[in-house]
Length: 173
Image 1 (cartoon, rainbow, N blue to C red):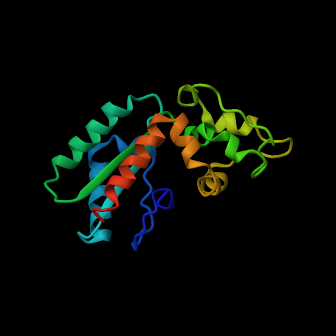
Image 2 (tube, rainbow, N blue to C red):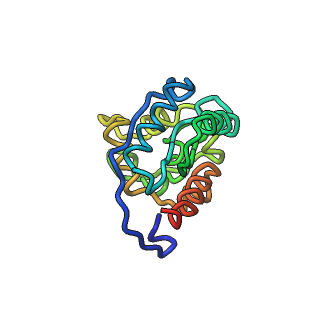
């Protein structure tokens, strides 16, 4: 992503703090996670919150989470990025670039409205060759390292928003 814009930065990414999706909408759990993360960056960085919208409206969810942060009275830089439906919809949007990788079929055509499909994990699983299955914990990081971000940006508004948010954050860090 950085290379696409010919940017160069020297920064450290701490181990992500994972919070189950259901706990993101619980004010105290979310605030505890943000507080913990803010202590890890010690005031010299930014926090990126990334989660699936599932069936929630991404804008409403983002506004709610920013409301939780505002009540904390902390001077921290936070970007909240919400994948419409699921993180995997970004892979579906860039399906052609994943053809033949990690057990996926050699020919993959994304649906015309990739962000509107339900169960993107299932879609990926159904596109696997016989004997292979999609594993979120194994395949998600592997696909994230190889999918075509330009293709994902063209086919997914939420991925394009993610890309823009990250690029806008980098000069701050």
